[in-house]
Length: 516
Image (cartoon, rainbow, N blue to C red):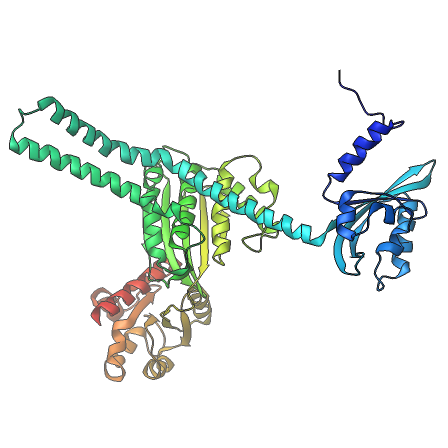
């Protein structure tokens, strides 16, 4: 039967055991009496201060360790706090035996008997020890990122296994057939069997190569990364997770590269796509996924929009957890995160991994969801490369209604440089003097209509006519109706959606580039 130490009346042996245990503690421990005289110090105290225990015991801790710059008012306030029965916590500058100073975190706990202070126990941690702890936290976060990477790989494993097992079946069948036939196989059949086996083997090699980004490490050098290429790669990796749950569409526009690690960015997008796939309710015909890229105020953005056949709370919960992450002060790759972020499910480890990658690249992830939980959006924004040649698109909006001009301007200014003009006559001068890549023009306007403007441009600036997109709330005259039916320029009907307008602009820009 094991003995129990009697803390009320310990024996000499028990006191030696307790003293030995305190000597193993890495923090400096001091026990002072009610007058502030040292009664006990452990081994860490001796290493931190340079004073042997015999030199310290019986001396005032303040007189022994305080620096000349520290005033007595602080120490008086500390002892008043202790006598009231309250602990004190703060930061001190200590003085070693050789006169050198050091910073330390101090916790002092009072021990009372019959309402009076008897002893005070001080636990002191040098600031440099905190630096070591921060380094350990950084290592732990790096381990968490690695764990998140493996979590995403684990989620992909079954789908990738399916991709490998099918061609593996072909290889096995071909080899078994060759073994069974031995020398009784014709040359034509042999060629067919070998060809099938090689085709299947190449498929296995392709699948294995797709996982290469998950071997990416942060020791690699940053370089310009093609975001659209990363999106396509991620869609291939997550395809088996997605295609059984949703229809997939993509709208990848010309965007500037970002400075970063290509493998990590592929991991980031793949992780989010896998999360989206797992969040969707299976066997719902209404599930839709659309991945879009765009350039927005200095950032290259990837937007994953989901329409859900059945409501799910997963995106709303993710949105809440992102708020917890931001609330934890995750201002850098080494920052910690709230334990509430990961509590409840291991699936959030994968998202933390994605969040860490975005932060490490100077970017962010935003999540939004509809009230009915039938649609959601995840947006990744990464700073565009400082060395990238960003194409600036100049857009002129022409309409006779100020409200329309302001609303269209707001709709487009996130991605383009926009000028607005009220009416056709002043627009002619702006087009002649400016260099607009796209001109959005209302067909029906008083004075100089859109049709008349188009005709006048044939003399003023003929090349600008190919850059016009007409917008109309309805055609009211035979001439404008005939023009709208016969023109080769795009004609959009109000109210026009932002994605519809942007698609028309990007289509016109592509046609213009191909024409050049």
